[in-house]
Image 1 (tube, rainbow, N blue to C red):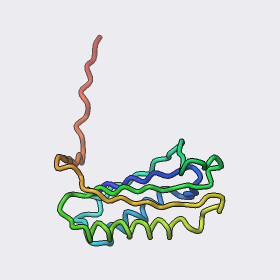
Image 2 (tube, one colour):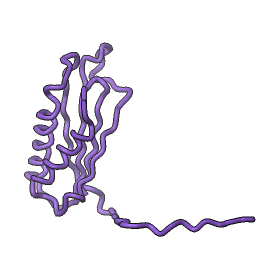
Image 3 (cartoon, helix red, strand yellow):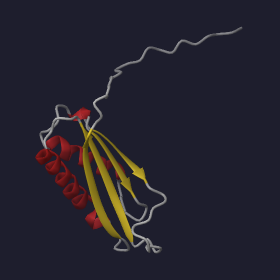
Image 4 (cartoon, rainbow, N blue to C red):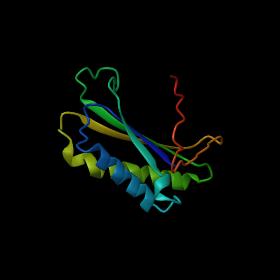
Amino acid sequence: MPHLTIQATPNVVIPHSEQLLKTLNKALWDSGHFKSATDIKSRLLSVPSFLVGVEDDEQAQGFIYAQLKIMAGRDEDIKNQLAALLVTTIETALCDSQSGRATLQICVEVEDLSDIYHKKILASCPAPITDLFI
């Protein structure tokens, strides 16, 4: 917790995806709402097929959709702060790299994780047992 999933259409220019994720994770960490920096997990997914509206055959519209899932218990004000933080961070990180060919929509949703959530950290796994058949 938290889990940040970014979906981006191919007409959005993201020059360095790992740097974008690092910037977003740092912004979340700097917000002071999370216990450990290593709790923040993010990923970027490409959206190969998409449509904005009903007539965007030229794909002049693109979007980034960020979904932040956090543990339950935070009030609406904190969720709104986190959503605004992510919008601003994405805008700052990507605005200068856009080609101008597509209008970029940045959408952020913050929601609670399911009450059923388990996590286990494996620092080191035992070596696998292999059966040798001779």
